[in-house]
Amino acid sequence: TLNGELAYEFDVEAAGLRTARSCEPRLLLFLDRTEGGGFRVYPLSAADALHRFQQDFQDLPECFTGYDALLERAAGDLAKRSAFLASFAAEPNAAAAEVDRFFQSALAGGPRSFAGQTL
Image (cartoon, one colour):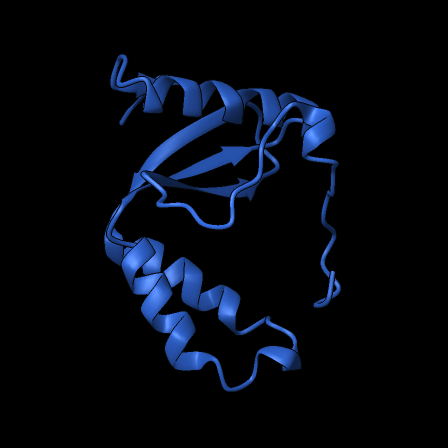
């Protein structure tokens, strides 16, 4: 990545997904790799979600200098949505499957719990 972090990239169309020029997210899921086992989901407050965005702003490459107000405004708007933290130690494919199950359950309006956690 531009900031030197490890990232996974994949061909969206090959994965059977579609792209869009814009979207209106219904919920946010922050991912946190841990040493412990399993996959857990915890609700986040708007303040905690905003804080996570702001922490990431510190690591942005120089090409984003001057966009502070725009980033803060976008983060503030996004943080108003339902937000969750997923803590996982699984290998990437297993974690991706759990993330998929989380979104399928959460967006379907099904049971308000996931992986033993109340949402």
